[in-house]
Image (cartoon, rainbow, N blue to C red; front, side, top):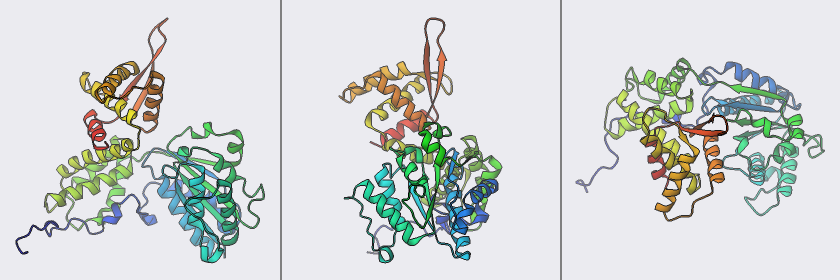
Length: 399
C-alpha cells in the first residue's frame, strides 16, 4: 500500500479560502468595488419595502460580469436586515431564467424558495401542477409569510413567455395578494430588452431602469486585490493581479471573467506543483477560461449552431488579417459542407441567419450590416469575438 500512487498531489498549498473566487460567492459590502452609485440606486428603489410598502419595480441592464446579480442579491439581503428592525418581513427569491426558462418553472422556483411548508401547510411539487395552480399557491405563501416579496429574475430576457412579469407586477392591483405586496428586479444583458415587452407590461413593470457600465482596469485590480486573501500570503507574484486585470479590461470589463482567470491560475499552479502563481499561469488560465466559458455556452446550443460556429472559425482561420469578417453566405456554404461531412441534413439559409443572430446575442460573434453598392442591396459581416482556435476547441469539447 505504501508504494501506491498519491493522487492528491503535493503538500504545497496555494489557496487559503477558494470560496472567495467562486461565482456563487456573495461578498461583504466592502468587497463590492466600484458599484456604490448602483447600490444606492437599487436601495432607493426598494427602500419602501423595508417599511412594508410596495417597492419600485426595477430593470437592470449591463454586460456580463458588471455586478448586476451581485448587487441585486446584496441589496435585497440588506433590505431583509433593515426591515427586521421595522418589524417587517421580506422574502427574497432569486430565479435564474437561463435555467428556469418557462413561466411555470420560474413560478415554481419562486414558490419553492419562499415557502416553508411547516408554516404554510402548502406544498410546491417540482411538477404535476398547472401554471395557474402554482400562481395560486405562490400568492397564498406570500400573503401568509411576508409583508413584502422581492423577486429577482436574472437573465429575464431568456423567459419564453413574459406573462410572469404581468402577473407579478399587477398581483396587488388584480387582488391576487390581499395582505402583502411584491417587487420585481429584472436583470438583463440586453440593453434593449424593454423594447420587446408588451406595452401593458412596460407601464406596470418599468418603474426604474439602471445601466451597469463595464469595469475599468483599475476597478478590476481593486476587485481582485479585495479577494486576494483567497490565497495564502506570498503566493501571488507581483505581476499576476495587474496581468489578470489587463486581460479582463481589454475584453469588455468582465469582473466575473477576471475572478475566474485568477482562480484557474491558482489551480494551474497547484497542478504543476508550483509554490507561487506566476504570470505564465495567468496566460494558461486565460485560455482555459475562454474555452470553459465557450464550451458551457456551446454545449447548450443545438448541433447545427455548433456547425455554423465551426464554419465561422474555419473561415476566420483561412482569412488573412486579425478580426477577419465572414459573410453569411460564406458561412452558409461551408456549413453545408460540414453537414455533408457529418452526414446530416442542412438547414435553410434563413434559419442559419437566425442562428447567427442568436450567436450575436450570446456575445460569441459580432454582426455588422454592410452596403454592397447601388442595386446590390445589403449583406451581413460576421466576426468571431474569440480566437477561432478557442472556438473550435470549445465545439469539440462540447460534443
